Image (cartoon, rainbow, N blue to C red; front, side, top):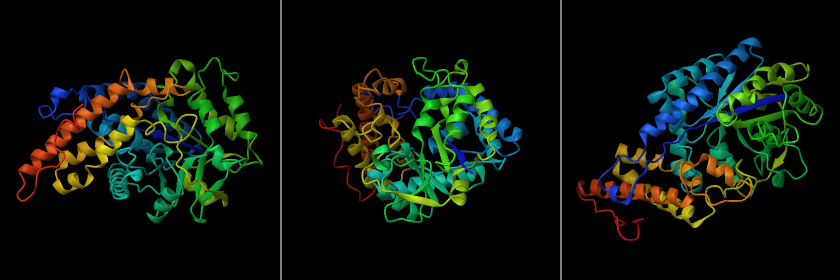
Length: 414
């Protein structure tokens, strides 16, 4: 009996405000509160509230047979708590149905595993605490930021005690095999991996409103036929996508809400199909084969690698600079500095610096609030310089602690 597993990523970064060189040392408010609130209000109105209400109605309509899962970043949860408690309540209402699973990730939606495993572990624990506080549940399945994955990450997550992990089904790793089964990492035979079926997922997330697509318009009947065609050739169809697909990336007038409203009914018309959460998939199906990912993969762009975040010298320098501060920040034990340092780790900041201009260039421009990757880099490095200035000033006020050796100088000015 094949299962459909819906997983939605919910994330909103703290965007850095227009931060100039002459603001360094004078203005310590790095993030644009007005803009972050404005964007959250817009996305709440277009996506979160109407889509949550639709999902709740679908769960009730199908008497719990429709089941879904979410990973909500810690920084998104913070903004719901502070700016839109009605959105937080709507997610709580969904979780309380018992038909929704919450997935673990890093609190700050960061690339921390690649630079500091100890910082990664702290952010994972912080996210777990946040989910427990607001929803009263403990996540059991893990997804890394942007589905960044390789064997080493899987080993680490398994050692943390999670029952399984979500990853991209990358063709060059799968070879000729299907993503529609449970897999395991190299040498970890009992740690299940749920691999995204990117073709079917992207038909909804990216191609749905594309009038140049040969399958446009995409009806529920057509999509359900594609899903049903997997019967006998797979056990789980993992449909993973950004939640903002509904109403934000695919606007309401595209028909995306009507599509989703009727999709569960069409899929369930085939008596052999059902919906399961990631944990239920793991409990229901055996692991069929090995997924041996030596290189780092993600769900981003055509390459499904890490080139969206660390392909050019600006990205590498920005990442080096922020993670070089780890020991110093931890030694200070200053909550405000620690929080800003971690917010500056959010992967979106480095995504805005991408200089990819081929097939995925337009996607990067769509998500970036900057006119150019260079402006994103300049703004980010100025914010880092102010954080370093604050660190130095705080150190100077501490007894028996020397000043920060890399205080603002000509090498760090941008």
